[in-house]
Length: 243
Image 1 (cartoon, rainbow, N blue to C red):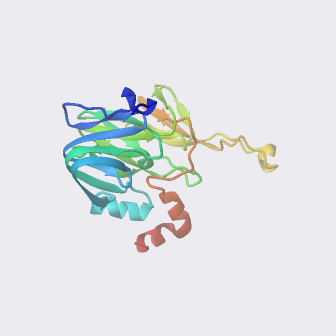
Image 2: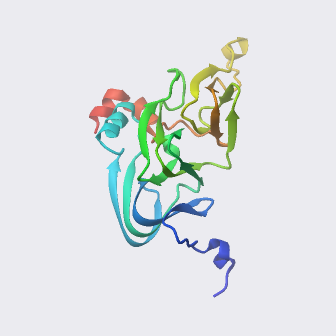
């Protein structure tokens, strides 16, 4: 049988070392010999003896935070021996290697999978105003290991060594050491009163030394797991009691 479908670039990529690696720009391959953590619902195929265990938002503390905020990463533990493939709606996949002392703040909606050796917590993004449409909480990852994130399109990595402003719906992740805030970009004037707007009422500000990753797409605000919509429907207390 012959087809361009069977070209070498489409065949499964093999490696001698276990761990996370790119199968292609939109698919992650985990060569499993132990366990990893992955976003629930992102497995697209697997081979071997593999078990999947739903973890909610990753422990009691993180579960409670996700209930209070409406935001959290719905996780599953993937364990065993074999090859597991992950993808998320054809989004581009990127790998980040963390070393001891590193810390990165990530919009949880963009977390795909990570080594079980990494630690993460749900933390409030400092400087967020209540008029912002972005998520109020992010996942901060620390430790040593590999992390896979997604972006919609090819991102740009901005070096923050001067005041930097980003549309909050396009900011994917940034150095956890950066100071964040919100800057009013659309000045209130006669145009605004008449219904005219630049469409950029607020931008997210970054200061300090580090980086921020910006995707070429402005996604509707989802918080860490689509939680913003839940908050709008039921509020914090309703989300907590709604189970």
